[in-house]
Image (cartoon, rainbow, N blue to C red):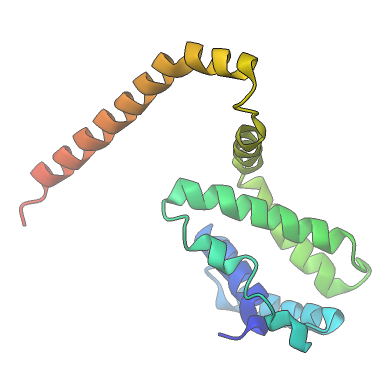
Length: 165
């Protein structure tokens, strides 16, 4: 897959993943719109390949459905931000934006979760006050981890009992 097809690929993955497009005619129209958008951005320029893909390589590490919803929500937001700064008088730009907004509405909590992760990365763990708070919360955090771990083991055990392979 060439770098020029990454935006189509990512957009297609997002839309198919959320069940938005079972109709190949709609996806074909969207592909046409994206081809026009590629022309607008001159995406066949040689520098597009520099540094590899910006979105598709990130999707590899997000394997669970809920995890993917978080990262895809952020990617959709970034596409929308990019398209808001383009010529919205063009029909293909409006169509792509409308479809992305529709998808965005199906991802209500992705941005909140992404912001939570970003907030965690900003914590100054060398700050004594932060350290005190963290120590106060340590037992609760460990309880949540144990509950989650126990729940996953129980689910695995139940699914193994059901399977009479």
